[in-house]
Length: 178
Image (cartoon, rainbow, N blue to C red; front, side):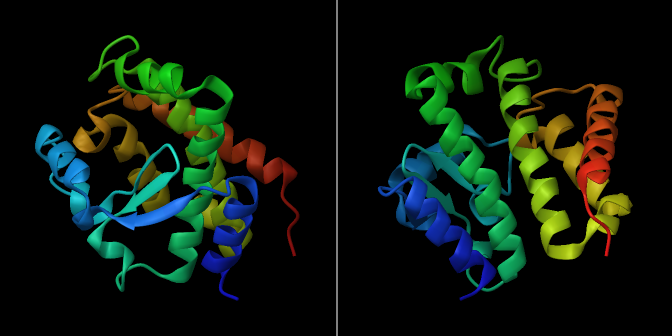
C-alpha cells in the first residue's frame, strides 16, 4: 500500500463519506475557478476540500508523487476536522469572510496555519527533519499565505515568517533524529 493509500484509508476511517473528485469533472469547481480569477492555477495545482469532497487538480494524476499526495491529504484532513469542529456554516464564514474575504482574511489564516503545520509534520515524517531547513519549502509556504494563491489571506510576510519559524522550531523540538 502506498503512503497516499495509507492516508486515504486513515481518512476514510475517520470520515467514511469522504470522496476524491477531479476538479475538471465539477461544474461547481469551474464556476469557483472563474470567481477566483486571481489564482490562475486553481484548476491545475490547488486541492480544494469542502464538506466530504476533496477536489483535485489536473496535477494530481501523474505530476505529483505519492509523498506529495499523502502530504496534501494530511493537510486536507485537518480541514475536514475543522469543518466538523466548527460546523460547516461557521467554518465557511470563518474561512471566507472573517473579517474580509481577501487581503485580511484572519479566519482563513488561522485555519490554514493549523493545516500547514500538519503539512510540515508530514514532510518530516516522509523526508526527515532536515527538510524543514529547505529554503524552497519555506518560500513556497510563505507564498501561499501572502500571495494571490489564497486571496492574499495575510499579506504580512514578517508575521508569516515568524509563524513559520516558530512552528518549525516546535516541530524540530519534538522530532526524533535518526
